[in-house]
Amino acid sequence: MQTGRGNWNSRLGFILAAAGSAIGLGNIWRFPYTAGENGGGAFVLLYLIFVFAIGVPVLLAELAMGRASERSAVGAFKKLVPGGLWPAVGGLGVLTGFGILSFYSVIAGWTLRYLYLAIMGTFKGDVTAATSGPIFTNMAGDGSMAILLMGIFLLLTILVVRGGISGGIERAAKILMPVFFLVLIAMVIRSVTLPGASQGIEFLFHFDFSKLTAAAVASALGQALFSLSIGMGAMITYGSYLPKDINLPVSGFIVALCDTAIALIGGLIIFPALFAAGADPAAGPGLVFVVMPTIFGAMGGFGYLFGIAFYALLAIAALTSTISLLEVIVTYFVDERQWSREKATWTMGILCFLMGIPSALSQGAFTWLSSTPERAFPGGDFLSLANIVFGNYFLSIGAIFICIFVGWKWGIKAAVEEMSRNGKLPVAAMWSFMVRYVCPVAVVAVLIYAIWTNSYL
Ligand code: PHE
Picture 1 (tube, helix red, strand yellow):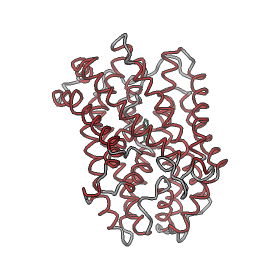
Picture 2 (cartoon, protein in one colour):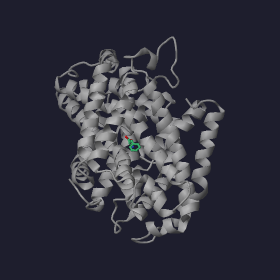
Picture 3 (spheres, helix red, strand yellow):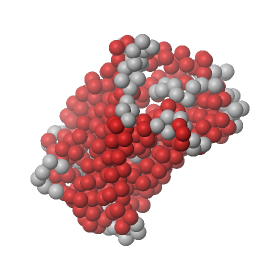
Picture 4 (tube, rainbow, N blue to C red):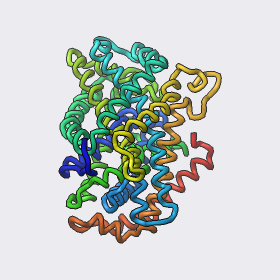
């Protein structure tokens, strides 16, 4: 156990840990399924625009807040501008952390089950969408299984987070993230060479704006924020452990690039295989779980090993993200409420487990929370609702306030200074303009547009 606050050990350590937070189910599970539901290409293009025009500026703003204050998501606001209501924005972030972790650990639990199935040889031979569909529905619809899997995943998260910052997280991320990347590349190669794959590439990169709806615009923004882990203080928290001699803007930009690349790679794995297997792109949260096994089936003898490697690494990628979600909550209780790390980790981890139960039961186990033919639950089912509310809307609201705080309250000058500690920030003027005007106005506009057209769910 660590006593002091701790720090990342090196620039690479920080980049890998922050990329570990950013890269996760958001890239491999959420990005493809959201793109599929929103018609593909136009959504993807908007997502890319939002990542670079809004995501990167906000990411840097959060990291600067964290490093300048060396505090939690709540404490950073308090320390940088004492007095006032601003710490409530951090409080909203902590709440969002609970909300995201509650449904995220359900999906993460599914990856553990799929790892087990892969080891048992379930995906050997000729797997089609027709055979892999029921495997998914049976698993997700089994309520006690879903709760158990979620519990195991949260337990793993708790065990790492209680060990403190650089010990567990940094060491694991350093080795495993690069391995994950290699496995994904091999899977892209298999997927794009399947018969009929070109339709999938066309779906992803053909920008058909007639398909664009208000819901797609709001989801693309939400996806950009979610994928970069911003809008709730995760990057404030990670920035608070960032040593002063590390180049903040460059590190932040590298993290954003890696994250976006992995999302596109996720899409390039799923969609070609999806069209080759004749599955429906708008299948919802189960999409990747239904499509992925068809690729392993088509990989011949190697498919067995790739299946195991893929699910093991996806589970680990998800773990480095759940760690950062729980870390936001724990750092708050440790820094602001003087709880011990041990107590904060266990208490909050167990609370997240309880909050996750409705999501775990929403994939068929409990009709009232699930999507049924007779009655549409708002957002589809409870899990999808939590995903949209916390993953899109709470993050968007958080991002607006973070921009206003950094741009107008704490002050753009102080923020630029924090970012230029190791060499001048070459695009300081543009960054300032984005954070003060473009980002908050654009996010408010997207939210109003979505609510106005009544397409927020
Ligand atoms: N970015 C993570 C992912 O893509 C999820 C996440 C969101 C983590 C917000 C922390 C904060 O999987």
